Image 1 (tube, rainbow, N blue to C red):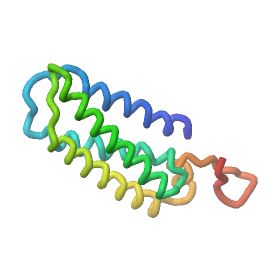
Image 2: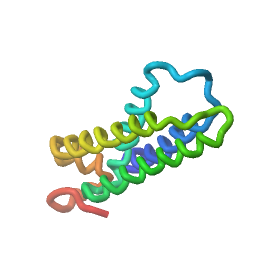
Image 3: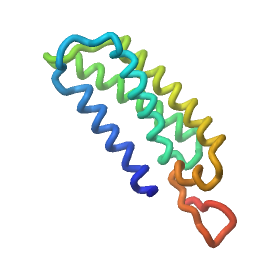
Length: 133
């Protein structure tokens, strides 16, 4: 289960990359910024199993997600079928921020067993509590 949760990050990264760089299917729709916000909120959340409960890792991974979104926007500038949009970057950044806040709340409110699973920790049944690998 931990492996499956950890594989969400590379899978979601591939999905976001494809969606960002594939030829556009037409003009941007009015909910485009909402889609950017939601996608990057989820992107921030799927970093959670890689953090092991360390907020510094969460902030670092989410900063990397935002930098990655900026890189994708810059690449779009050079693609004939896409265009760079600063407002997309703003929506991405807001999504990452809300994702980080949501992740911190989820970790705080989740019971220990589920928290260990979300954070990618192996639960050692021979000791009192989850053990870090």
